[in-house]
Image (tube, rainbow, N blue to C red; front, side):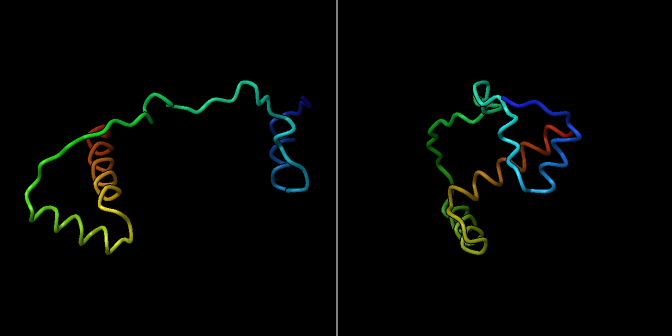
Length: 83
């Protein structure tokens, strides 16, 4: 593995002529927050009117019902963490 200072790596990246991956130790690569990304199935009973709201918003944005539920839950969780 090659070594360089951070400023040199910034310059290499900005110029785009050489890959900075040549300077990374890929053997220690890991996915941050891996445990937080594990998913669990959830069954949810909600009123029909709310399903219609979800479906309209999902269609408007161009994503699935499941995706809009995840987006809305994530936005709410982010607001709660920030408070």
